[in-house]
Length: 76
Image (tube, rainbow, N blue to C red; front, top):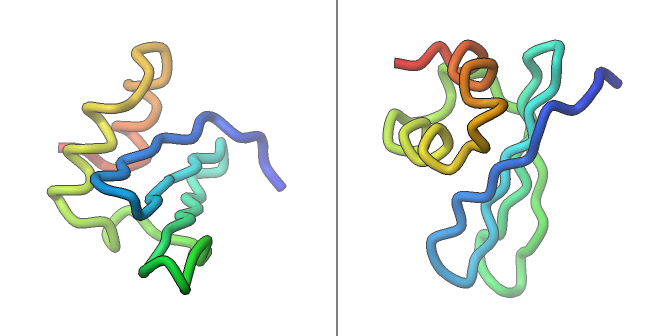
């Protein structure tokens, strides 16, 4: 597995939604559908992430990783 860059949470309510970014441009999402279906994992390509979620990710990203994350997300 490649080196992890950072994990960004865009949780909007009590359901988790975290994205972990890796140096090889892989993106892992761990999220909850509902309280009985928690910690689901999926691997995403940047084009599979909605513009709204990309906005949230960039906004919540630590400043030292922002440029690298924007490049991975092909943002804007």
